[in-house]
Image (cartoon, rainbow over all chains, first blue to last red; front, side, top):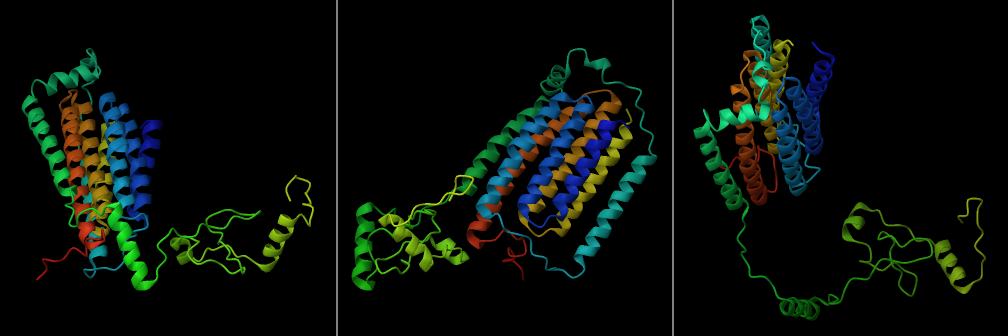
Length: 260
Length: 99
């Protein structure tokens, strides 16, 4: 057992276990990407350089990124529910899988696999050439069927992901009319929302704008931040400081690091 | 070069993938587990190709990768379609046909 195999095998099993045990789907995706990369290194060790590269490009490059895209659409923090729908199913499935693993490893471990044949002897033309000879010779029918499968999959994905528009798209004119109808009926302001506050200290979006009387303008902080409750407080001393700065009443005292 | 180690690793990974499919309830994570099982099978193919000294196993592993890529595309599109109507990716929610 070579050192490289030990490292890659440990890391790939660790990645698989991390995929299994992490609660968030994004973490699972990153763990499985770790496993895929380590499997690619194992392919390289098994004198399959072409498959190793395809593994990195197709799996870690395309498939896992597709997974991450879908996770971003579905919602990053969609964590798994831990309630069991079927009673005792989790225990039973773990027992079954451990039994399966034990059966496979024990039967394979006791089998005698002759390793007298070396792939290097048939390596003369190169790995890619050898695979190409088989793929376009002995397995050419499978290759053709695969091409048909890929076309079908592409069309199927487009059909499944396509969404028919139920309502016609609103034009700018119709949006304006709707806004003014809303204004007439409910008194909702038809113009843009007030921007966030800009002071000497902060101009971040969580800084609320102030009305002339010093109270906080509603809607000047985005709704998600309001829901999270992360609005920056404006205290009376802040107000006074802004007034002082604007009237030139104070000199900005600077600290040793040049910041006030 | 002992091929047995590789095949044992492949069966361990396959078992972990099987637990994932059975235990996890999130459809996307189940899908990742299926990918792990396919990869474990690929590793066994490549290891046996090495042991037998021919490239047939590598060609089969390549075809498995192509089929897995197509399967991922369709499966994720189905998950997206279900998510659009049900606003969840949990497989327990998709039980409309239950008697």
